[in-house]
Length: 541
Image (cartoon, rainbow, N blue to C red; front, side, top):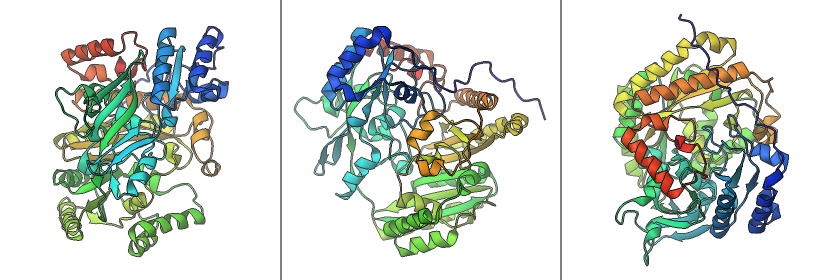
């Protein structure tokens, strides 16, 4: 085996820098308190350290975090920070791992959007919902479910904390993405706050005397502010498409001997428009999530009752009989949720899905994973640590179906090149595969390694879950190795013409675009944010 690659000299940026004295910025803090009230400007050291971290690392420690409760307050915050030359960094549910809301300047303020969370209008006649961008996907889903409605894409797995504005900034996927694509594809209207405090309507929100029922009315100026990692403006209000909830759902799961065979089945399901959600795991990722840290009998019962409530007694029996250990000996496992408006329709799709999986060499296995996920879709963010308390971080790309197997091969080849170093630091790797619409194939390499926790883990994870997990000393060398592998993968994705979501400040977006496209984006940034104070460094701007 060849010698492992040289580790980058760049620091892995683990713990945040100690908070600096506010000093000359005390006047800014006083002005922000006048806008939102003293209780909603967080500048204690512990608060500043919390807002300095994402789920992987940190850069600079901000001066404070401010919590607006209205679009007017958000506008006034932007104006105050602009006058003082202080950067604004929007933050939603805080589940990012690509530096999206990390601070690149010490003179910056975190804008915590979670109080800006009202559902403004559910328009069942015209099939849209207008919501403030700090609303969580769980809150929105609950309100819509009461009317038998949903958005086509209806949230990420982290939807208990993840907010609408974050998903529109990150262009996230999961629930519904197999049929309806990513979060931004559901957005038909948007109101943002620019760097100088201007409240800017876009898309369906820009129509003078009409309802926000349609996105395209002339040029799409809204597109500049979607999937932008929060680099262009602060998202305040969004309008999303609605649909009736599907009443019929079935689940299938198949095991495969090779990654290529599983990829073939996933692509087949995607191209035929069969799966609402389709995901595949290799043995490394599967074993990490299937053989979890000790769970209580009470938690197992609660999960079972939720499955029965959601899918009926038959679904509950299938989950109970399957147990949790059957995945240990499955090299590659695929888990699929199929939905349709009628029982006949879902049965036809189910039959076609089984034929596709069988033709790819799959062997059927219990379909408990997607049943459990649908019974309790938005769960506490306990998985931001591994099942044995290890640190966890992914990286990802989306490719066309024709490139899926070749990229997977290159990911696995990179893992093999690092085998010695991985063994030295107990780094485990795996990957997750997810389909996006009928056009995209997401590949998400994942890393687990023993390392010290960040302070944010203790603030967002359930204490009863954390108490069951072991702790580890800091391992900066392991963290550096993980960072190096992630950076190499990001460079590989650019070379292969892949795209990514959750661009944050990590992915090489500036290298991925053609020079003419990158030049135009820089010009547009100069128009909407000439002083470069909105989330500096996001999108590499």
